[in-house]
Amino acid sequence: MKVFKFGGASVKDADAVKNVGSILKKYQNEKLLVVISAMGKTTNGLERMLGAWFDGKGELATNELAEIKNFHNSIIGDLIGGDLQNNYHEVDNLFIELECMIETRPVNTDFDFLYDQIVGYGELISTKIISIYLQTIGLNNRWLDARNFINTTEDYRQARINWGATEEIIVNRLQPLVNRQLVITQGFIGRTNRNNTTTLGREGSDYSASIFAYCLNAESVTIWKDVAGVMNADPKRMENTQIMREISFNKAIELAYYGATILHPKTIQPLLRKSIPLYVKSFLNPDAEGSVVKAMDAAKEESIACYIFKDDQILINLSSKDFSFIVESHLSSIFAILAAAKVQINVMQNSAISFSFCANYDERKFANLISQLTELFNIEVIKNLTLITLHNYKEKELPAILTNKEIMIEQHSKNVVQYVYR
Ligand code: ASP
Ligand code: MG
Image 1 (spheres, protein in one colour):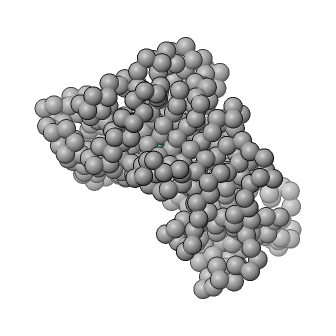
Image 2 (cartoon, protein in one colour):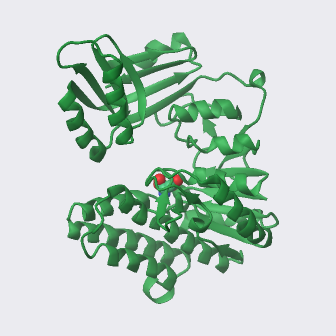
Image 3 (cartoon, protein in one colour):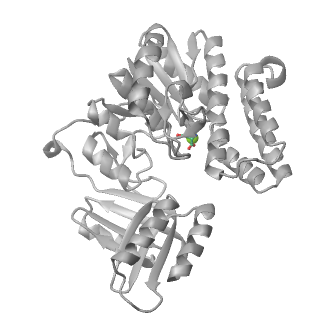
């Protein structure tokens, strides 16, 4: 049994979905569970719709939703013909649910909770459409709601897996279905014991694939991407990038930790525990080799330098108001505030009288956070920065990488150096 995952770019229009169909045809004789994301940039659109609705901008929310609906309607038209309202009631019903929801102001004021009740619709819609399409090209399949199987905690937008319950239900209920038929399901979403939808964090569909693979004891996971494999840097940002053919689980975890977007940080762990290899292959060139992340001897691993960029970073420098040293009690209050706001720190540094950290910027989170910190500390805030992490880097390459960059902070450790720059 294999698990495949197709992300947003692989189903961004009708031709892309047709291509997914042709890839799946090649694997018709395999037992396969297929995890699919929302189409194209739908998740971003749903986020915008939610934000507008939450902020009381009803008309804007309605327009955002209409745009999302048009986008899907035209894909359906190009893919199978017909339209939502007349021919695809199940898909249309999902839109009606969203339309009804945003008609009135939200009663609940917990943004993260509302986020999870809404944003996962992108996955429900995409998988419904794709399942219907696959049927029309002769690929019999079973659409399943991933929320029935992925049991999570109540940590909205960052739900954690209740492994015991998830494994039990997957083994008992899902496994027999996958043995019988091609299964199409969603990434990104789960459900709590109180029956609320949760999401696993942005780009969480890879993690979904890995959870299913772990619980099904799959022989492998394949993530189908628009790149030829795992590259040592983003080719849009650097020249002479190379594909890393074989990567150990440990290296993959490290790269993901530092923000290599091709590997979602949580994805590797479950696979590592069961030594299930993870293939990264190009959906544009499905027969090409791609990359594999697998259990391997560290000594055999090629030491290729990797460059990981993260944009949209915020740097916050805190110093004590009375020029006293930054001591444990300060640090513990800083960390408590950051933890409560669910801020993930990418780099941090402290000196006698200051503490600095760099994190992914999120307007909603930081407005509140900054005002809390301002009460306790002198604060300096710098936005729109980039963090570059160099892994196994070569000293002689540094000057070229750092030219024309205003470095805000830097940090060196054994194989890794990080720069936050403007
Ligand atoms: N659709 C979700 C996102 O864009 C999940 C995923 O694609 O992995 O974040
Ligand atoms: Mg996506």
